[in-house]
Length: 194
Image (cartoon, rainbow, N blue to C red; front, side):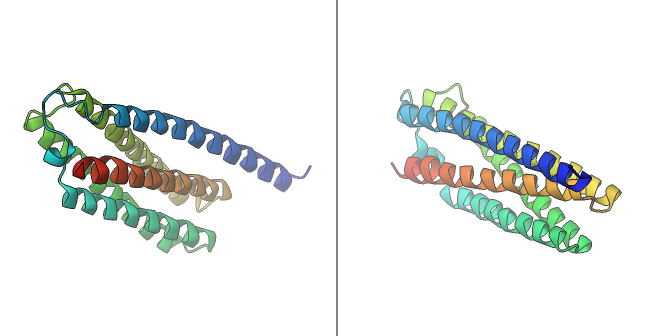
């Protein structure tokens, strides 16, 4: 087996391992969604989604995250074409959008907790905070990973392994966007209008 063939085989194993990881994350989020579905009306006499959720605010969050999915895709395309400057521009835009999204999510949590609607108030809020915060933690991990990829691309001048890491990061980021679409639809739209 040649060196090039070995590198391809290693990359394929890493990609398979990453897909397996994403499937375990699907199981985690499916469990959290099921928990939320069971507990969404367990408000203990307190407010539910319609009274608590600010749908226009969450719609802006959603648009920001979906835009970041586009920008990370553009970063990957630019990297595959060898367009280094464009890759960095798109990655920085994606990073900034991710930070704005995460900041908005934290702001939403602070407002709810500040109004006395923390996770301890009801099973509904406990399930809500757990589901949305788990997604937020994944976004934070994605931002950390993105920082590392940016530094490695810069230092190693777009080494093939780093471009492959960018591709896996893009897959992870798109996965988080899909999870958010489910959160937006199931938690905020359905839960906020029920």
